[in-house]
Image (cartoon, rainbow, N blue to C red; front, side, top):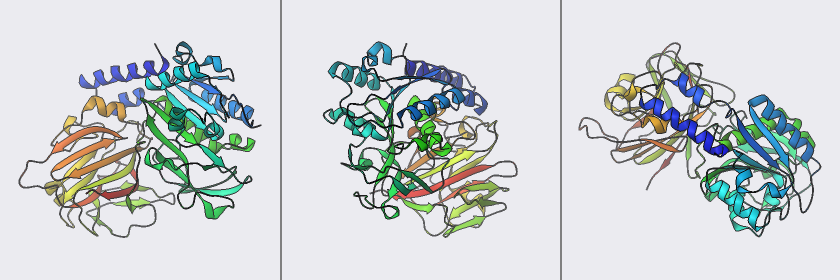
Length: 447
């Protein structure tokens, strides 16, 4: 049984437990550990072109991360390791600054089959300078290397702070590295996590939209790429180490994330103040310097009063604080303007955040109306302390709930006293001891 097969089997057992009624988040936390205990990662660093002198530092850093977070790391430059039988031992394969044509056709076929069976890929830096004549690999890495200026400081702008590779970062990340330009922009096919600010350094050629790190589901598997990692110093940087760790966690399936392509969203809250928002009822939301809103007291509602919405996709990142998951909050949609938070309860719909209630009042449910698909929800859910992403897609009276990119609930309103076709959106602060944090609330109008 393959490594990624082992992980998927464990999730299936967890789903069966949920269907039997064991739906409290403490069990989910055990099923979704910080890393997949027993996972194996293969680090491949063969070069047929330029060779980075940081490769040994990168291998050492990845081995250290494995020792600290419970996954085994094997390193090789031998392409004969790319057989179906051997790749089946690993939950993810890291291409660490590979260059040129490093796999023959038989090895390519084995690797492509491995990804197709649910394997994971992590590309670091010159992984984009690899296998130019293999179109499938170009899709996997996301974009091919084009050129780079000299090593220099620059600013990375973090677009997604819910993904495990970037959740620890502020909105901007200043660091020194070799900054790649790419032959194409991966935004249409991959989910961009970070871009480069070309005004912060000299020599960039991609313009205002210069992706540098991204993720995607690809041909049956998961892929993460970061263009950083040229210098030896990168691998001694705790922030960069955590960046790599999050990419590995996503690729192995240990942590879930929404890696669907995303564009056209308008921020409602991006960490730069609460213009347009109002607090209804007691309690509040506390803003932190890193752009996070955390619920305090209640029961109240922070709602976006500037306008109503109809036919839209609302996205936001959220995180529960308590280790046992005993927190309570939710996202309200489709309610009329009011200074009374109970108006939203009586006239709108709440998409629940709570691991400890009954089925129709737990995470992913339309509160009091329809439970999430518990097995699917459990497989998509990250445990307390980790960030999750909701997409709430409202079209007419239909509400679809996506958790970390996975559809977990599909509800259609039939109550004539309520309507999803127009209304406001808001975040609940449920009460003392119910601490839930939110980031990056954004919306896109649908046609």
